[in-house]
Length: 121
Image (cartoon, helix red, strand yellow):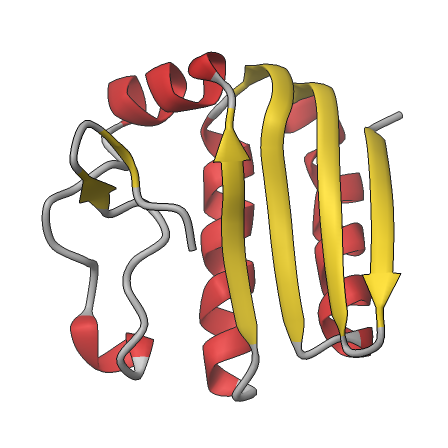
């Protein structure tokens, strides 16, 4: 089971993930992201307590971000643990420029670097 806490405030929500966020619980993460995006206009995913992750986590958060943009909503990544930053780096997610800019309607790519860390939100 995916360890998480969801804090809601009106049309905004923060999902804080804990421990392992890997392909073993990807289906559960997908369901949580879909559910929270349906209920909120602004979603933040806090990754500061993630101790193990793989590329599936990044792919699902990217997919949620793209879906949010299509629906005129927002998905942001909050704080990231060292593990998340290292896994993102080794998986090729951090970048100096965003993915397809036209899709982001002026929002930066979730994994775009700022200084020496991942750009958050």
